[in-house]
Image (cartoon, rainbow, N blue to C red; front, top):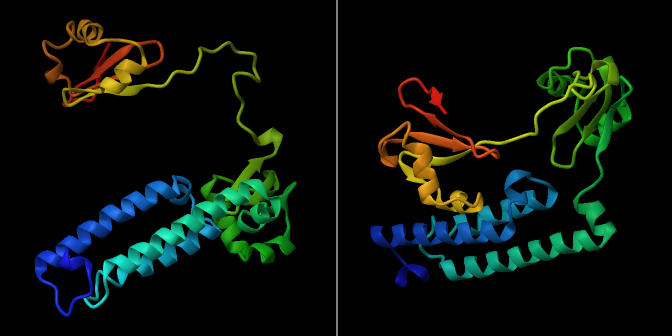
Length: 239
């Protein structure tokens, strides 16, 4: 464990061990932080990312710095992060500071110029984001909001919204989603248990199409328990 402590010099193996330990440690830390910090970088998440990057980076580039101090500091920071996140759910004042309400940028086709300054974005940036949402005329926008995560939510005015089957009183089939149950001949046993089926049931589905499950490149199953098979050559499926 000499690589863990401060050293005058480190061997190549000790540098590798530092990298491995730091990588595994960051994986555990990220798991504790939760998926929110990964999916959206908000105010608190941005601060944490900057701090953790600096704390871990220095021992990985300077042999005179030990890993122990960096890990202890990281644990303290993560505890504070989790505590602040929990407090933001309990105290509206903290929540409002860490996760401020969205800022209205466009309302009924009119740009709220005073809010552009508050959000610190330009008119050009606003139009760029609207183009990404396939908006060619800002007057068709009923509401556009600047979200705390740095994205813009756009809501079109009612006459310009896509027509849905419900608008036309069309009866539709219930929504189903397909998930891979066999990939490269390997069965997802957890999914098989989730749908309440066993291996014998799956083999009955596979047999008319393939002799062995190992020959299946990809098979998916939906909520109606329909199994579809895909081939490597043409990506077509047979049911």
